[in-house]
Length: 190
Image (cartoon, rainbow, N blue to C red; front, side):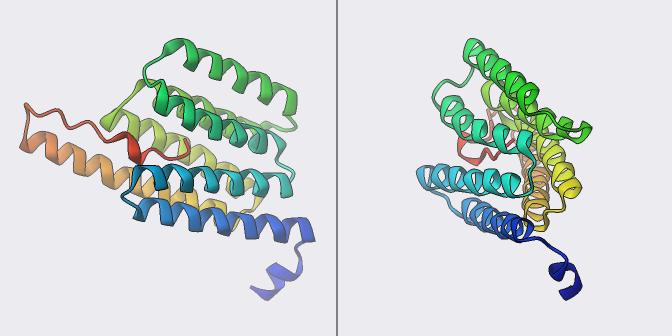
């Protein structure tokens, strides 16, 4: 482990630190039951993720993560608004085009598109499936750039989504006529 740390540049060390900080914010967010605090923690986690990506010089991921912060606020207020969702998708595509440096930049773009569609248009199990796929795309990007904290954070998001999907499915089977849409408060990065 010390050999791994010794081989890192200062920028990579700062990136690892930001990834671990983001992981801490994600854990605190999932442990919190207050919607407003959750939103603040998710925004804080995404600021740390954006810094992490910048330190790893993953510019497409950094720029799209900044847009995730805006998307969280817009989707929360304008859930179901196809026009605002379409505008966010166009902005995501333009930002990805402007910052694209390698084929692996496809992972943050996939995550951003999935997260945008999911947060604006879906609820319940479909939302969780799409956000889980977005977390998987972010996790693949974090593996490629070598971020330990970022990979762990997205792994936690993926596992949490799977657990929530199972819980929602069981509730739907137990109470078939009941509307058991997942509360909007549990939406992650995407």
